[in-house]
Amino acid sequence: MAQIKTYPTLMAVISANHYQICKWYRFLRSPETQEEVDINNEICERLKNFGGFTPEISKSIGWE
Image (cartoon, rainbow, N blue to C red; front, side, top):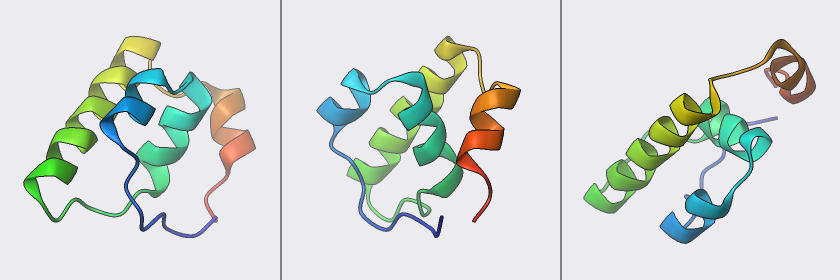
């Protein structure tokens, strides 16, 4: 999967499951605006609360 260029909304991040959070964490481009920084921070916080990547999710998502 290539880099994700369009940021999700904050509400989408809040309601996303563990798998989707991991995809955004791995493939979302670096934030460019304060709003994107806030969304990125929420993604990181949710990933931490989910316990990070599992080997199964990491393998399923891949690196490309």
